[in-house]
Image (cartoon, rainbow, N blue to C red; front, top):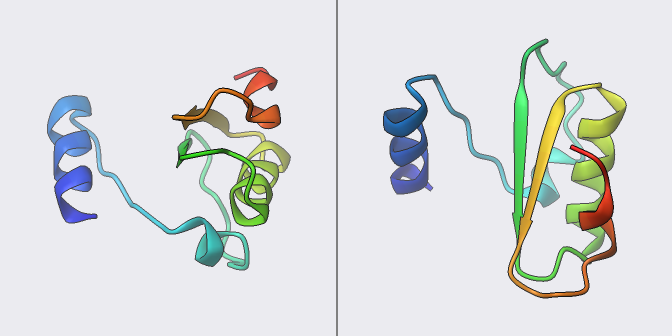
Length: 79
């Protein structure tokens, strides 16, 4: 996780936090305005990934789904 975090911070020039979807979906902490959520999944179909995307959408943040399989239903959502 720290390698990904460092890479994103270096390329984007902004602070970055990385969380596992199964932990993020149950957190009740507020999501700050201006947050961009990048959800990375192999299939995009696990309950945790879908719940994480749903939480991001409900908070009106920008969310960017990334997956490696070809039939993840949530990938069709607008970013």
